[in-house]
Image 1 (cartoon, rainbow, N blue to C red):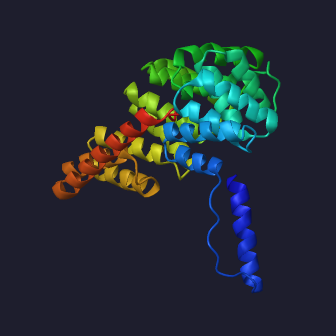
Image 2 (cartoon, rainbow, N blue to C red):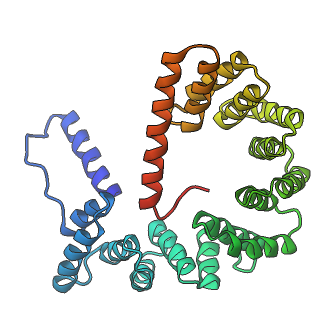
Image 3 (tube, one colour):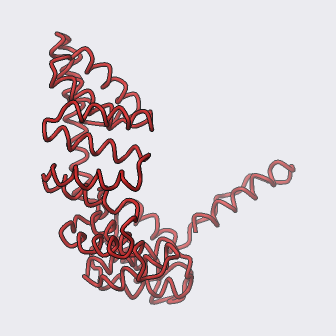
Length: 311
């Protein structure tokens, strides 16, 4: 629907360029589009009320099934969302939004085999393949179903021992569970099959820091930056590492670089505030402490309202 509206305005602009477009009143949105707007604004109850009215008058309205599924999904009524999303896919097998929501709905209702089949179709892989199991594991981690995700990832590795990103994901789970030593082992296994991915070095650096292996952490974090100079996470950890070594001047350099890459990082603001405080720059330190607190609170509020938190 957004594409169609965009295409219309592109054509309208082209007409204006040829000299025959006139001032006209904007087209009013269809009821389904109005419901979509409400959903985008995080108002699923209002959207569902409108969609129910539409369904009674025109049950075959284009886009209706997808939006009904989305409304129930946002209300976390996954069993009700599922049949509407399936209907949307029957109408359009390439409906990416309906596919994604249906996969998550199956996961949230513990229909894991069905979820894996939907994901396999979405990524054009066999449903019994290692990649299908890994993708399901990733989705479950996103839903914070960490314990249940592990068997899916392990099955993926049994099917393909050299599958990339499987050991990385297990390492991330270990870090989440405060098992830094286990994380190191998994990240090292990932590097054995995937030695040039900066992301693995960054997270391995985090694991080493938790184990107070600061020299090892510094070495792999510098590799992460060498592979990707736009990685704010590695600069933040190097800044925190410099603070642990009582070098706030060096720390501030790393952390200023991190904030240039990601001004919304509350970790970077907090660590930089700590560095500035150690350097006697009290005013700047207080400013960054306040920014860090504000950003952290905003993130916590967002995660409370979000069904799909980042891993």
